[in-house]
Amino acid sequence: MNYQDFVEYMQENLTSYTFFMEKAKNFQLEKNKARASKAKWNEAKVERATSQMWTQAMDTLYGQLKTQIGIPALNGTQKWIAFIEENEVIENVNEGLSEVEFE
Image 1 (cartoon, one colour):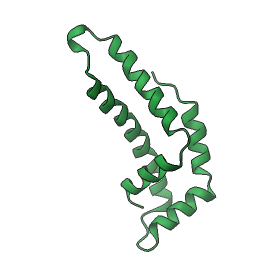
Image 2 (tube, helix red, strand yellow):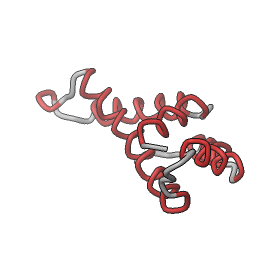
Image 3 (cartoon, rainbow, N blue to C red):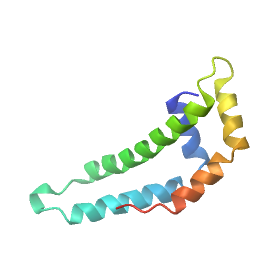
């Protein structure tokens, strides 16, 4: 499974995706409040920073799974999905994201 397919799959299947994005955006907005007036970010930059937080989380997870699954030449997507289901990756990630705290 390539990275883009993986991210799309996770976004579609994680119930905590929306929660994570809301929490990450609130974190970025709080950081923005603490910035000096001239250094404050506009809404687009806050959105980009929020998206980057998601991307970083998915980069880490993809890297961890890739070392265990690899990139199979045949039926790669099916092998990834089977591994994700067999190892309850969705459930574990949902649990982890629901407990995430940003600092």
